[in-house]
Image 1 (tube, each protein chain N blue to C red):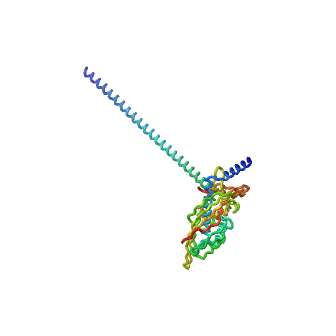
Image 2 (cartoon, rainbow over the protein chains, first blue to last red):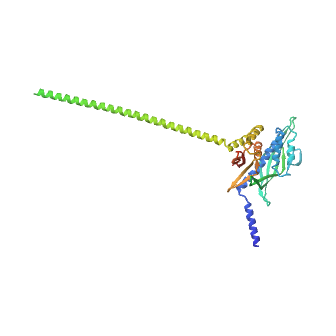
Image 3 (cartoon, rainbow over the protein chains, first blue to last red):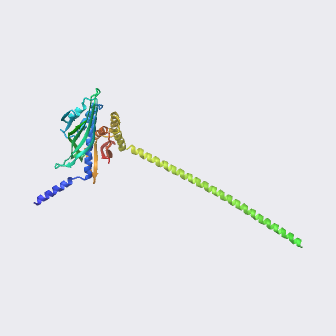
Length: 185
Length: 176
């Protein structure tokens, strides 16, 4: 019984130790939101028809690094009720190849709908919502516009790495699946 | 008898008048001389004061010029430090209007580093001496990040150098 009490006390102390102060938590919240804003900019660059192929490919690599491998992106349209899901790399490639002469993509109103919360495995998980305004236009007069609301699952994990012989602990923010929740004109 | 006495009296009186008049003239002359002396002394004092004032102003001007020169030298020295130069590159890349200009700045900035793979650590918060970092990156990726995102959110807080003066590690801190 004594051993059990000691073990539970140690476990409680470990759990308390793992808790982070509001100031540090706020910094992590901001870091995760910044990663979403970064993705927004990368998507805008990839979709932009003026971006050279080599630059778009480099940016795709950087954008892909933001995600947990295997993550999917939902794609919807006003002409169909279906939402298609693609692996993020495939989504970027399709975005780059869109059959418009001008594409403008803008994300706005980026905010948490579910705060980052610590899970039993030590990771922090939360959900961020964004609104995406898409505008595509062709020289032959073809135009398409829509606004999509999307939910992005965010995972934040404490990791370690070696830099010049020192162990550096850092917060690794990774994005999960991006799900479409609304599509409107 | 009376007439003789009167003449003597008149003579004495005239003499006394002459003496009195002589004394008065002498006094006037002395007073004039004293006034002249005082005027000359005042002029000399004024001249000395003006000279001292001019010398003081000259000294102050020289001191101000020396201080300005020192400040300018310090500013130039600070601007030429690797941290200042790197900060200028960060701002130039993030604020660049076109990709070719940003790429040119990236190439120049990379010449400050021992390798394009130089690690970049970003402190997102610090509490009680404990630092929270973003995922470490490399200087090449960070410079491209500035070009793509067009935002410079961090300040340079530490640089490490090798023997030839090239940067081997960068620590940045998130601006508040």
